[in-house]
Image (cartoon, rainbow, N blue to C red; front, side, top):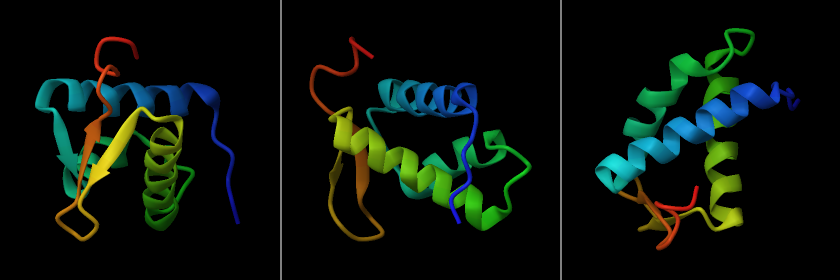
Length: 87
């Protein structure tokens, strides 16, 4: 079951995720999860919150805002070149 969240919540999570990567240039899953997990609506349970974050990252990847380096637990999410000043 997919739960729709308000646009403001998605926008806030997107902005926080970008700001973190602008500052640190890369982020691993535990860092992103730690940054966003408590910012996602309390109407969701822990599993739904994690899925929301995964969906957000995937959407950002599809849009070309971020890209992954690696494919395992050590994978990093980085800003796509040119994104840091435009988004």
